[in-house]
Image (cartoon, rainbow, N blue to C red; front, side):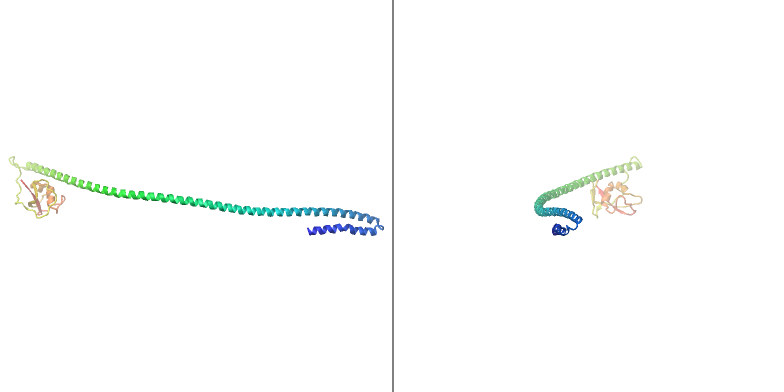
Length: 266
């Protein structure tokens, strides 16, 4: 702006300089006077233009100053708005965080109540399971005891049936091998008097007529089997097994082996 004002002042002083020169030489050179007049006219036009430019520059300067003021005002308003926005966002963030914290606390409280309820139900289930387990155990024990009684009864019945079968087989065999019709039964084997048992016997006799506490000592002969010995003494194979713990139904008898045969009452 200072340069423009100086240029405008310099241009405005040119006409006076040229005017002085024209006054001295006006009478001498007429063509020169015309040229100077033209120059003066040009200078006046330039001066007018410079003045117009100066006015335009001043107007632009005023507009620029106004724009700067408006920009500063807008910047201040923007900063204030930004600060207000930050404050609003901070307040909203705090409110949102408070809501989130409240929801989290409520969720934790709900989960805690649910867990407590589940623990109570689990305790009830465990208690009921223990009671059911005890009842089931007692029931199983009772069932096993009853089953054992039934098995013993069935074993006694089976022994009785086997004894009857053995006696029937003995009679059939005796009738088939009798030398004459007059012989009702085969000759009984030679037996010594029954003696008391020296061994502890187990099991139940197949018949009330059989006594495990006394009996005979039999010496096994060649070809004899438990079935034949039981038939000869009118006892069952089970009776022989019960009174001779050292043998089983699959044991092969040896000649000369000693067996205890329980006594059968006549």
